[in-house]
Image (cartoon, rainbow, N blue to C red; front, side):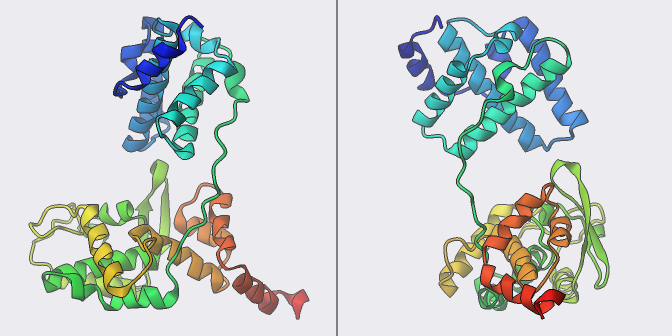
Length: 328
């Protein structure tokens, strides 16, 4: 390639612009606009996902601009070599970007390329078989049952006002009792507030909806919060609000759990998302069906849910031996 290693290194030191349109020729600019529109409108990808993909593609096109000494075109993407891609991934690694970030960035480039292939503008080429960085298999780190119970019993200890403690407990209950992501819990409206024995309709990743049963203890916690909340809550407004009545910032829930973690000497892995992990793990250890747990969590792939089977294999074996007819 025309660009020297020195030029590529110097380019890496400059802040990467999030806008890929600044590093592309006119024909590729049109393809980029079509691709971004496709992600948000047809794929209904989350705004943060679209923004992350846009940054990743911008990073790659900027790299190619320094690597080649010229802005890339559609034809340049069609002529990519493995050396091009490896040089880019190597540069990202040198900048301190982890394997998961680099794998996502490569996925973004492949997504753009597939869109250009569909429109008949390029052949997919080496991107069809280019593998991303090997990712370490992450095993979820849930709380055990006594740790979860201690957390719920001590939420009030960290709250500056009783109603704030009731609010935080209601949020924690939704994460642990319904397996919600923190964003899903905080996106609920007042009209969504569930009653015991009903189900919550949750809008999850990728715009997919799922129904989650609501345990009485979860419904009670939400009802206690609603009774204590000093702010009027409009039906279409947020269910959970901050001290001044605005939509609750997730950072406040994270901070509340951090304080509880220190109070109770819980591990650093005790985060709001760990409560969702605990929901899945405790259901599975109690004999819950893996497919049903997949639906409750809103996982697109069963393999994602299967990570929970690695947490307590001995417990799962005892459930199997007790339940399977051939084991008796």
